[in-house]
Length: 160
Image (cartoon, rainbow, N blue to C red; front, side):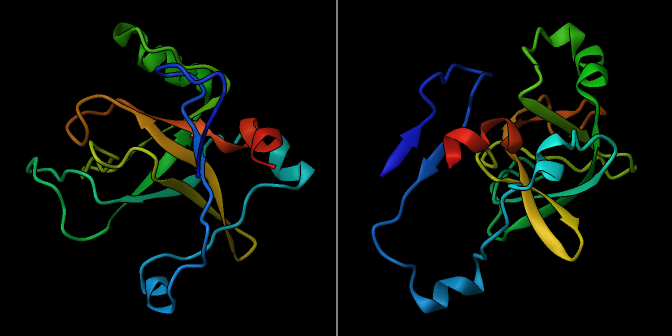
């Protein structure tokens, strides 16, 4: 069953849930692992500005082709205000329900086409938490512009 956020619009409330009828087969866990949700009040209040995060997916690579392997990008989150400033010429509708992140290395890692819906994860106290979901970006991997992610803590009441 697919549950789309009732207020979904392009670049707004871009989040959905997939409810499985059956458990995944045992060998599936070689490729997919469970992740913690940010349920505690401490995590819900955390804006996750200036955190090292990891984004994974099978989207397009720097050559423009789809990856046969799961790829990983290590990014740093930035404040929503800084994100709005950096994206001001794109007319993006970034708001407090978003998290933005970008690469601060010369490799310019980023999420890309095909990664949408994938996880933005942060490691805290030896646990991995889902704090964002790949939403949208611009010219992936070729620019210093941040990518935009749905902020999971903004949707915890709906998720629960």
